[in-house]
Image (cartoon, rainbow, N blue to C red; front, side, top):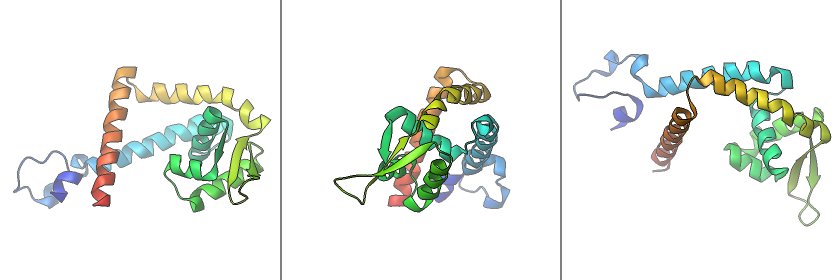
Length: 161
């Protein structure tokens, strides 16, 4: 069963694990796709001066305006120890500001500054660049997204068992 999770296609039980090349491993294909995405995003984000994780946080703030640190960590699927340095950098860049809640000083809200909001207009070029790099129409991209989301959910369930 474990072999079927990591390797596609699996056509027979007698296939020797040593005979399986990287090109037959789904996990390696996803890993290579992640690397390719990172290269495209690095180039596309250079004019904005953002890294990919910073861009993800900014996208969520452009959409919602203000979020708690907890909401950001949850949406990105990262822990606070990973998100906090990213938020510190965005704050130092003058793109976001932190505000402690009056009703609960343990909670910190993150919101856009004028400079952070102004960067929103430039982000359309990033999304266009990524869309062009995908090399597929909207229907194919939507289907691919659904497949990757299903894969992620299935792998999450396998870990939680």
